[in-house]
Length: 333
Image (cartoon, rainbow, N blue to C red; front, side, top):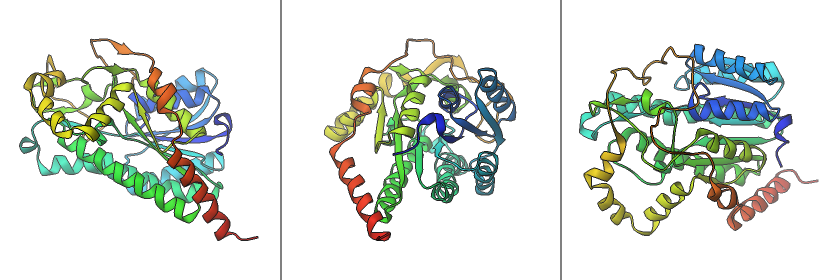
């Protein structure tokens, strides 16, 4: 069982805005010591200042998760500063909206470097530190779109599908080893963050999350929950679970529904002209925000997530038992 959150040292990779920022604030509010990493130094500085003003403990580490050496340095700094790492959270992501044929190979590669390889780099940096600490938790923030594709965000969808394979593989390998390291994948529905305003759009207009839309704090609460009570996967928001169920039961029907222009395209477009600025290649020089500018209703709670999403499944209990069995076999008394 992981330590109480108040006793943990937590690294949040991708902490400058949105879900990552909300997560860093939530961990700090629970008493954890938080290492906040992202490309944007201004946003990191305002985040750490906010945490400290509220009585929390945090340090800022500028790092691009696409740079493996920078992520290793992040882990080393966290251990030097606080002595260990208990939970590592991979959040960082960028997005490009447009038809697949209109998005260049270089743009696909950049999204994969951040959204997928950034998580790989985080895993590679976190595992040795977690072993030295005697165990811990790796939490990867994926998306409902890691289970079901939608049109116009091909690079993002592909990267999230890749994360599914990464974390599922890692989870089984650690169980085979008997390692006291848990792996949780977070699968949010649409979330009101600056991610959409910071995305690159080839549609001529800014993009938006399709409804229903949840507040970033709902996702952050599930991440903090997983740091203490790891689960295999946590769908955040009933909409995410419905999306996943639809893909399992009737994927072709979902294809047809999302091929209707008003649904598949209309729900992702705003009427605001594209600004021509994005954070795909470089961080934007803004102070960082948790919330986006979604004009519609934003759900502040998810009863489904609390009652169903956080529940432990029978298969997870079996995997935990096998992990313990393998650990005893590797360390006979």
